[in-house]
Length: 117
Image 1 (spheres, rainbow, N blue to C red):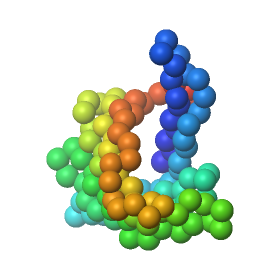
Image 2: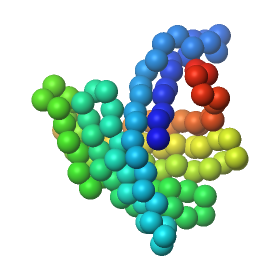
Image 3: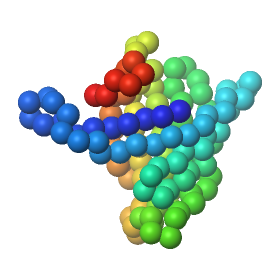
Image 4: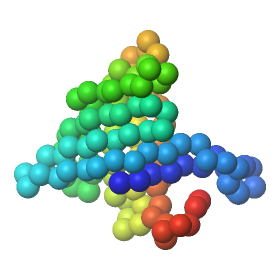
């Protein structure tokens, strides 16, 4: 699994990369999911949840932090397939002393390998 995000200007053109993560997803026969997701900011998440009805819901089991990483205590993620090429993504985050709350949402669109934005 790999996801990249860019910041876009008012003209709709990409300005610069804003986030990236890579990981591995493990789907079990009964629909349970496990995921290991890492970020270049020094955060690694182990999540578990389930896949059903076109959606994947995951919540953290553990978060590992590099010594210089921002404090992250928990995350919750929901991925919903809205059409064959698009995932809706909602990410909740408990970090830097704040409780679990909405962090970001996005539409993720499939791109050809090597294509950005």
